[in-house]
Length: 356
Image (cartoon, rainbow, N blue to C red; front, side, top):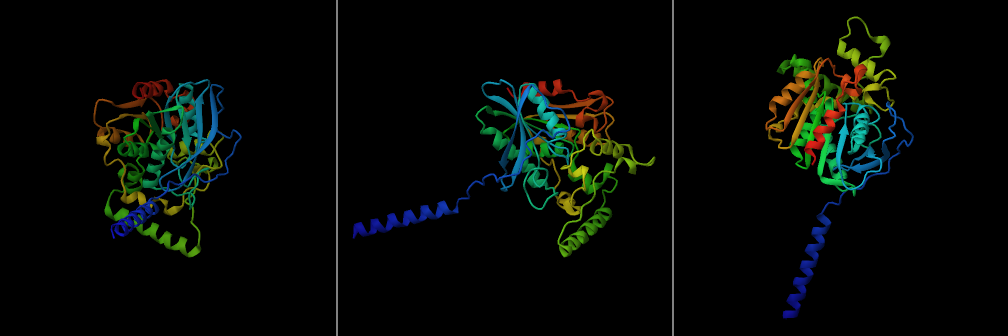
């Protein structure tokens, strides 16, 4: 009798263990992506760093594509930095330039394409998500933290333009991030919900926008494909009435300076309904609780400077800094502009000081 009871208990325990194992969700594996192996960046390749393509997967099972830059002849475990942005750009543009240049300063870096864009996976294409894109940064930290030549306790991130706000959002959530730079940042949730300079920050304007976007959802579902919002104006479409910051976008994204065929901003734009989720999910609700170091860098003449000022005003602690670049516009901090406005030595010092 005792043996029978014991056998029943052992069988039951085995079945429970088996059921628990089945309930555990397996970590997703990176999918096979078609990656361009030739150098197709909008900036020249450095002879001071090694470059290779890598992939990693985020918590939603989306495989992200990245360029890894490693200082030549580097030894031991390095501090690492994950870079992305601008919003709607690809790693072959501004983020790759930042990543390569910081690698020249001794860091292992990756510049990655966000979910649903560039060479990264994710369906449907050409959409953005405040949640998934924040997760993309943490997925980059996952990847970097398990590399043999990376010190997992010395990882930072850098976000450009709309990805500056996303970087701050990630830093508020992910305590593994020890240093964050937000360059020429946008708060995409604020500009989408309120319009530029908050001119449409009222229930009537927001309701009208939401009505139009939801009518677009119905149209998209009926026709079976997503309408695109359109990329930047072409140079021939600029007029005397075109705002200067719109002209600046055109001169970066639609000329040899920054054009890339995979960039959403250089082609047909986001899906029109991509903005919807940003209205109800504002970024940076907890950035005042970030304990790690943060540097907000903005151009003095940038139309977006108000985003950086607001973000900096919410940060607390003695390891937060606002770096204002005299004379620089928003897009000058994409690639340095005509006067090499990006102070890479200063950025490298910030990371060296805070990724010890």
